Length: 93
Image 1 (cartoon, rainbow, N blue to C red):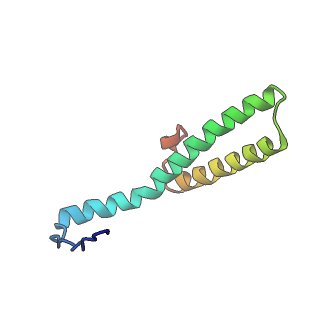
Image 2: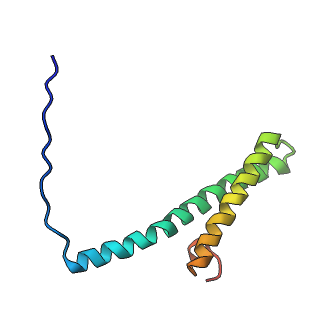
């Protein structure tokens, strides 16, 4: 026999104006954080696939994956360029 316990949410106090402002600023940074993570991950993958290509071992599937990685990098770069934050991926601001 399984017993279930009801979970009652505990009310929390509203955020102070300073905390609300900080949260709003942080939320606006999330797309940039995501873009940097996507760019860096795709760039690493592209380097690995380029090494396969250089060795003459790139399959058609690998080539498609390389093209997808390059597309992801371009999209992430566009997000960062629009925000004026190419410096986050080592580019000119």
